[in-house]
Amino acid sequence: MVSLAAAAGAWAWVLASVRAAPMALPGFVVAWTVMMAAMMLPSLLPSLLLFATVTRSREAFGYRPVPSVVFGAGYFATWALLGAAVGLAGQLAGPLPAAWHRAVVAGGLLVAGAYQLTRFKAWCLGHCRSPMRFFMEHWRDGPLGALRLGAHHGLYCVGCCWGLMVALIALGMMRPRWMGAIALVILAEKVLPRGQRLAPLIGLLLLAAGAGIALGVIPIPSPTMGAMHDQAS
Image (cartoon, rainbow, N blue to C red; front, side, top):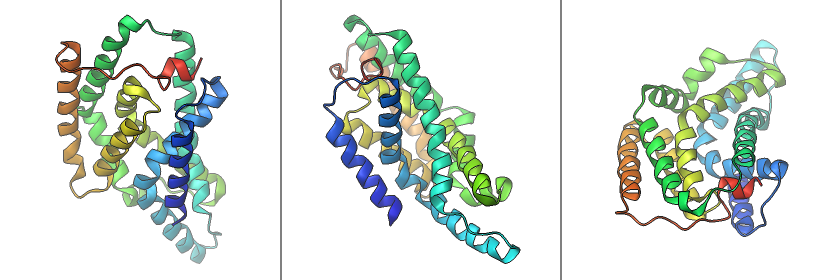
């Protein structure tokens, strides 16, 4: 499967780049987008497969099939724009004092946990879990339509997952173990039967971890070069 091979390649790139030097904003956006490919492609696979089926079925109405990669390009363009915003925020914030590290990690987890419990999270997750419904409501024919469709789907995914990305950034963006953990959470929420029920449970775990770190009960991971302000400086 091409998408799974692409995900494996993205993971290989991420693992090889863990100890890379800090990078400027364009390099950060590229690294962020590759990281999103590694984390999101497994959960995006049902949408890619359904897109391929639907676009082939449109031949009966005189439309040429559009490669799924066009849909995927629109999807990851949305994530790339978010990466640009994250990188720019890191540049504006500058290096954070070491004394703030505990507060940043705790705050990131608390924000992520609280968002997991919101109706907006549930609404976006519902769209991500129902690609057929999404295509029925938003389908557009042609390459440009596929690109716009992918970008639109990406917006729902960003709405679903931005809290988890905040947690990842706080914990160390390029740390493979945290990337893997967040990727598994995303996959479970979007693909498993009744996976939407996991969202509030994950939220409660994040809130508990954030509170524990804030109170000094839970030790915090040491600062890494994977933090937002280091990568985008």
